[in-house]
Image (cartoon, rainbow, N blue to C red; front, side, top):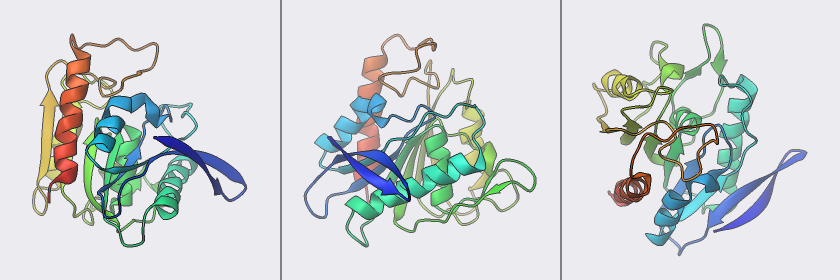
Length: 230
């Protein structure tokens, strides 16, 4: 993968890109709070090796556990700008994201994101997203009435049993909330935590998995199957 720089008004941001042949599947990767997608190197390389085009914008690290409306809107906008820059018009795109990146993708797929009563995050849906692979998704943003009604794409949600930041109940709630119109495939890995999906987790985190590398390879392969399925 290589890194290119894009402009967003007066500011610039980097995007990691793995080019592929025309008509190859396109994956838009939305990173979590840390902001550097290359900390998910096993997943990104597995997607690239499977023939996918990968587009992964970089962001500044979120300083607070609760992002602001401006931070979330900026991330959503730059995900779309990256697609505009590197992906052919009309191409179908699979969104894959970790943590806050996963929540941003739900919003881009049509979900209404809320930080609290009267605090809706205004994100314009992107119709190019055809399915979502969500790693440890925080779903509390979407618990307002009707917030998920417009999300009509297949979803795979993957979470660790030991995740205390976005516990399995959040992904199970998502599946329950959408059960009348969309099946959400929820997978819970026993012993995994919130940062088990990252090759390079935050330095203060403690890894609960005994064989993390095997898990990274397994979930990356399974996500590729989901991305490539029709």
